Length: 212
Image (cartoon, rainbow, N blue to C red; front, side, top):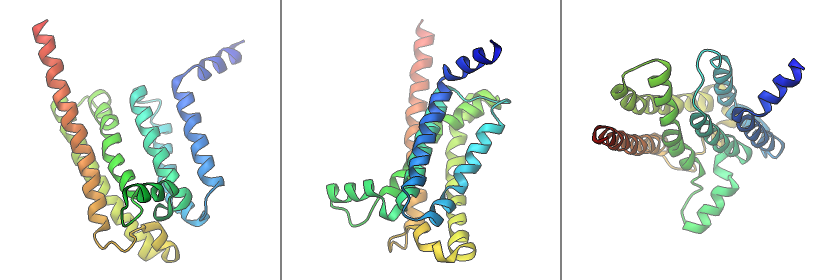
């Protein structure tokens, strides 16, 4: 009875369905990948991210909203690894739709990195680490920008030092010499836009409380 009760509790938990959804997307990306070596390289960071979420779960649990946002970002990320970012089918569709000169799926992922992960970071800093609300509103911007720069450094190491043969497909620069700078810029733009919206929302929320 205890085991049955535990199973029912797990299945009824929103995080279970979030995890199941991501698992299906991840499995689909692996089964349908056109470049297995690139998929393995790309998803190294995915594994690290999942291990971090699993091992910190007992000490700190993000809100359901945060887990949804993290899930959406990871889905976008692993879907990119399915075809390689430069040859992503959804990116090709957008390229034809907007008549762009390159496949911009990687740009969407970098923008989403900043836009989607701002709230989970703010959630962790404010509720988990008990940092002041004002600092928790601003610090994620610096974290995202730093993490974005670190990712570009890791890309360079992977492409030029450790996995030279897979370097071009992993980088996905598509001939753009400013690719790294644009990627960091988009991540920064995404997190700043969300941070400003969140800050304005918090001001309006505080005003309503004072009026009441």
